[in-house]
Length: 110
Image 1 (cartoon, helix red, strand yellow):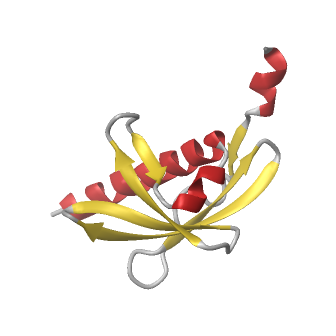
Image 2: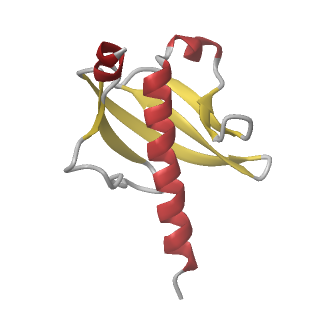
């Protein structure tokens, strides 16, 4: 059991915890999950009054991440997204939630 806990380690690059914004509200962050580095690019958009994200992992095709109230995290909803490791999807969700919180704070400033 201890080995499984060690294998599922998540490291967020301390130099890029805050997403770096390009034009609009696009950004990226770096993750290391199970000793594998990932660069995650994201682009938020609205659909049905809900924030969703286009997410590209290591410059790959874009998946759509949407908030899932059942598990309280962002989940990929594309057919090909079922191949994402659970730990990676959770790590991406956590960073997208941080992005949401940062934007909510920023837009509430006087």
